[in-house]
Length: 225
Length: 224
Image (cartoon, each protein chain N blue to C red):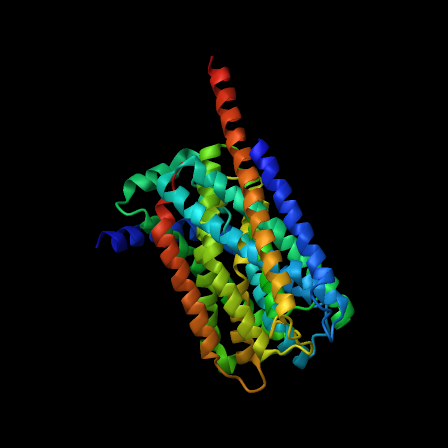
């Protein structure tokens, strides 16, 4: 318990330091201005989300072949935290886009893929809430998770091919290309901080799921007696 | 070959069951017809506009119809516990999936081919010169819908609110099929019709990926 609090405090300090550096150390971008700084969060969250979804896939495959409840707990933890990060990406993106592009949203390849990815994991979590029996819930959501993950590269390629055939008038600016050294520091720090946040949140969710499973087992034992 | 002969027998059962009552086919065709008519109110169906929006709305209505049509697939095996009987009757559980997905593909293809002339008449598009190619696109697209659809039918049969869960699980996953099928159909309905082989190849690849996934994980989908 104390260890978790210490970890959380350290992480909070790291994120606060990163925010300070992003605003006071990293320079203001030439063409976009201050709004560019939202990218420090936006891109780091996207990376964390993809790590989370990769972890979910690993957990799903592990559950199907080993049937260890731990794998199921990891799967749901990774999916929920990943979805949270994707939501941050989908919210910070339009906040950036509106002053820069003049529009909140466009259906270009990257945005559409992110949206579809979010939808797939919403479906995964909804499916879990619709199956009551724990073993069945774990197995069938794991199987759906595997199919969904296999679909991701296919979604990516199809949307990209389609979008290159129907070019968009708006082009994503060179954000992140040729990074100024001070910006790179901010990016790396934020990336580290959000990866730490990802691990902390997944750990907490995992422990919550483990606790729920043991409560459920105790309840079943009590009912039998 | 055990797998193929088992599949043939089960496929015969699936087709016979459906063609005895034909209720799934008729309701699906009528549903697509309703959606196509409703879509006509959303844009001006001149010939050029139909070429722009037609393929998309056609495939969208096929996807909606499929997500309704695929529900009874495993749901009716829950009555009288026929799923256990099926599992005991075959040596390879993949035969069950193979039979069901071929049957679903056949049903989907039938409804699509039935809808095609109606769509052509209502929206002023020329389909006769490209009929064979259109059927090829429909075949690959229907396979793309039926393969994950059959798998998710087995999953949603275990869940509550299954009528809503199947479309929720299936439709986001079918994004690549929608894009590839729409592009292929649009190419054929264009003023200068062409068969877009790249998209057809992509559809075929999609079918192979999910057929392989179903082959690897199918037996777990049948667990109770």
